[in-house]
Length: 64
Image (spheres, rainbow, N blue to C red):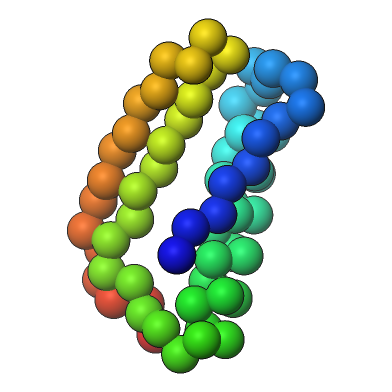
């Protein structure tokens, strides 16, 4: 299951970016719960205006 957010314009304000990530995580949590699913891994992908992409993956304790 995944969610993504694309800004209408480039952003350099880290506080806005952190809020956007938190909102996506909240939406995913709700979607997982509504389908009776749990997660044990999270992947964050950040793509810049020039399409340079960074991806990090982390194992987490299962969500319930």
